[in-house]
Image (tube, rainbow, N blue to C red):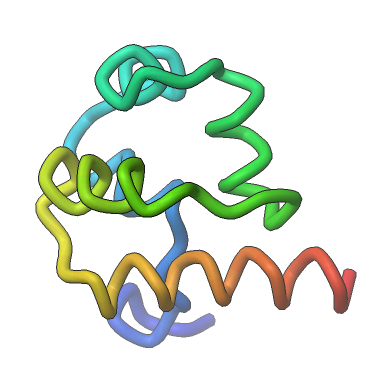
Length: 79
């Protein structure tokens, strides 16, 4: 099993790292829970205004957030 550091960064991990549920993140960003789920599952990507909020709320860098969305897309298309 990979160590925590070796595991791919995901939006779920970023969200859970700051102890937020999908509901709390949805309210903070101003979107629906379905939208958060779609982002986490690689079905959709956020608009720029949401990216800025996600970076602030999740306390991550732009690069980390992009990595998380890339990972979601990879999981979706390689599942």
